[in-house]
Image (tube, rainbow, N blue to C red):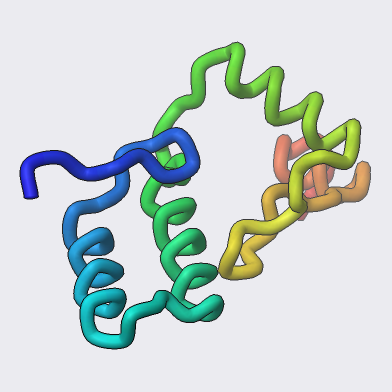
Length: 99
């Protein structure tokens, strides 16, 4: 194995690709569940991690996708992409009112 194919526009992790090849060789097919699992794992590995900064263009595309309803509001594991804060919660966080 010299190169790893692209998946969802990103290079797939070699170990993940090898696992898929091993299963394919053993069973002759990759189950739907395994295929979904591989996609979820690939998307998580490519996700923005805490503390990382997105380029402005990516932020704009993300907000546009959310507003247009084209972006799922959670990650594949169910963690929220965003949360709603009340005015009072914001004022407490910015120490405008006692918390």
